[in-house]
Length: 267
Ligand SMILES: [Zn+2]
Image (tube, rainbow, N blue to C red):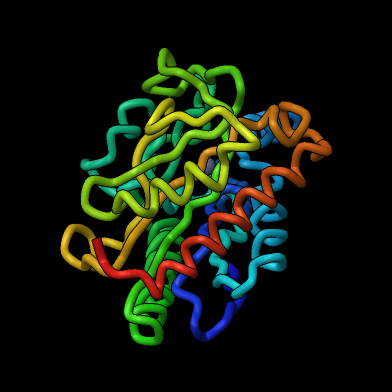
């Protein structure tokens, strides 16, 4: 299940919020082995809390309203950002598209290929299809699409992280070799520089691009923003702090800068 909030016809920008929800479907809850207390704690660690609020504030404040695509379900149902098959490196720690391990390496679900296929068919595939249609619509309307992934990550590494030894800057920018042009990275650097120290692809790397366009539609640009949670909330799983306003302002500045790129010659 996903929710899309329309933006302006002339906006190429899509704010993508995949990990902000704590909601599980009854079927997904039924396959999770944790009791309610342990599940709540796991959601505290794994949910990118309030990133929907940050994206919403930026969308409202932007000069030209961007489009928003939000996952209305928890990443513990399916994680739309993971490959649903053997390509996914996180499968090694039980965190492919359907998680079987918790952030601390405990059992989250039994290995059940039938249930996994059901979850993928019910949630992963429709999500990816809807996102692809949204990208196609921006391409048709504006000639390009700019995907900005809005995530957050804990200030202290969780045991599941594969690259936990990497630096944990206040804001981590995730790039892709095919889809992150220099002007987009530069725009993000400028927009966030006042609110935070920046890092590139550490401790998380990459950004979300629909497979249909991956590595061949040059008009699709993408960048991931990973905000360290102590900047804007009480960890783990707590309320937003006053820091959220500055983060939302920085994201607004990025959306405005990227939207303004339309008039600019292609580098
Ligand atoms: Zn995330």
